[in-house]
Structures are given as structure tokens and as C-alpha cells.
Length: 158
Image 1 (cartoon, helix red, strand yellow):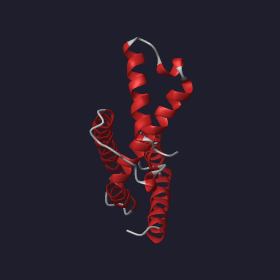
Image 2 (image 1 turned 120 degrees about the vertical axis):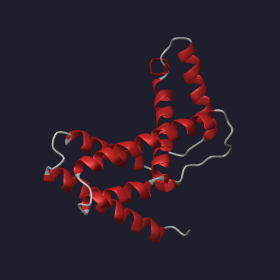
Image 3 (image 1 turned 45 degrees about the horizontal axis):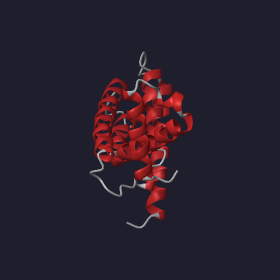
Image 4 (image 1 turned 120 degrees about the horizontal axis):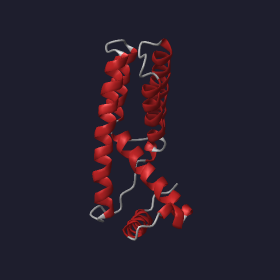
């Protein structure tokens, strides 16, 4: 998806207008609703990506058994929640059109899905963070993230 800030703002205004009329954007125009959701997902991925090092360091602490599963989950969820608050503020800035010509970092594409998977793993194992399956899953994610970091470092010039 190519990010188009003008289109995003247009869809956001349409969504708010329909909400003020007591109507559902999804029911009124499913395609535009889904398009708006994709834009917001891209922005959320960008916000998460901006904190990729913090997420990676947290995973590394858990994988190296410096912190427990409970500590990992608690710290991960707190970091994720801070990013969600930041994203909400950023979306307000974009919708007010104070930020011009914003483009998310293309490397951030899909990072929100990665964070959602980690959240799901924390939820799935909330009764037993000592389970080796939980450890193995987070370790696999951490290794994949490291591979991705190496790949983008080789393919991008900074």
C-alpha cells in the first residue's frame, strides 16, 4: 500500500462525519472503511517500528533468561501500550493536518503484525509463562527479527 496523507485525512473526516450522524462507516462504505484501517495500520506499524530497538532488547533479555516470562509479558505490554498512546496522538496530528507530507518508513511495513503476534503469545501463555513453548516462540521471533535487521542493514543505505 502506498501511503497517501490527503486520502487518509479525507477518509478520517468521512468516518468522523458518519459517526457524528450516528452511522457506521463500515456499514456505509466497507471498502473505504477497510482503506482507512490499512492507513491506520501502516501508521501503527511505523510507531512500533520507531521503538524496534526497545522491543528487541526486551526480547533479548527474555531469551537470555535475564528476565522471567511474567516480567517479559508485563514489560512488553507496557511498552506496546505506550506506543498505542503515542500512535493516537500522532493520528490526531495527522488528522489536524499539522504534519505535512508524512510518509511511514517502508521498513516498518508489517511490523505491527509482528507486535500483534507477540501480544497474542503473551495472552496465550498468560497462565503459564514458564512453558518452554512460550520461550521457544519468543526466541524464534527474536531470531527472525535479528535476521530482518541484518537484511535491511545490507539492503538500505543510511
